[in-house]
Length: 438
Image (tube, rainbow, N blue to C red; front, top):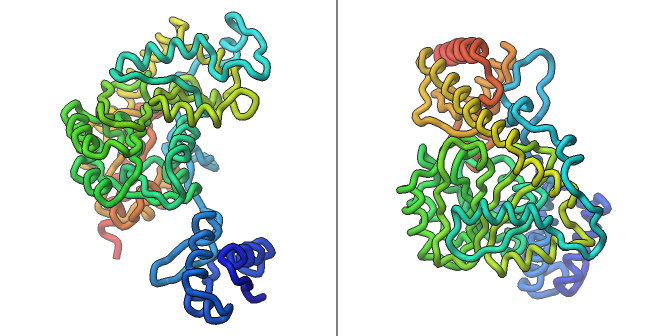
């Protein structure tokens, strides 16, 4: 079925109809602009505009010299993929469920009155608690909102200020959900290198000078590397961002309450659009689906329009439950235990790896340990799976898989001392075998 139309809207509509009917399959190459323009008897600019609209709508994507192709449904890696058989799961990226509080008990506690349409979208008690928590780290005025988790907050923040095909600076390697958010919304990523102290200022500056309109940064317990910003590194990043006050700055402080590292802010005082996001998933439970957001007034107004009562507000029952948990001394004590446990388990694994000649150059925070090896990570993951261990290959977390061919991510949140010793022994054996393989 030929593409038809004499205007950009008609041509784009014709392509969309054929994609919907299956006449144009995913990855099908659309005719070159000049060829289709000649066939339809229209100006090349008309076809170019039609293709641009298709790309903006996510129907097509550009491949440079490879032309414009019909977009496929993105195949995205995600956290928490189930591990089959008797394998020991060091791949999930999950917190230890034994270090999470009883959500149902909290939901039944305190005074809860059923809200109706038109009620404030944010629970007053939770908002007051969050404002006090944020005020310890934010000097400029801010508004407090609630989103359906950190990923939802990040997506809504980007959509509030950016257009499809805009560039977002993100850490490289990067959190799986952030990679998915950018791809699903049609944003382009500008990878910013990460070392043991977090995002590198020189790499961030290059991304901003190349046109990035937003930056998403994890200030501590970076996933997958475990890196946390030092005060000096945060100051250097603030200095870089101060030269770009219109750039949207999103800080994803996902591990806040159970982090062993202090929070160091990268948002400069000159920033006009910014947000600090604190998910509750890692220490209250992923199924609570809540993140607290502190942001500037304009951004808050844009988010409120998308999270208003009567449409897509976050359940007030969940907000009530979160507040009951956050102010419960028993839960606060549980957070202290979790902080110590995660730090101990991470250190335990690193010590065992070191004893077997495998080095982790910095002390990570969070649930994961990132290990750079001198052999192919896919081969390592397969060999470990054959021996009963599940880990994640590093290429899933990067824009250019060739840059981290030997990296693996190990989730240490539930590891025991015997498991740490056994795993380190197995990993060392796998690496030795691969080094000598023909």
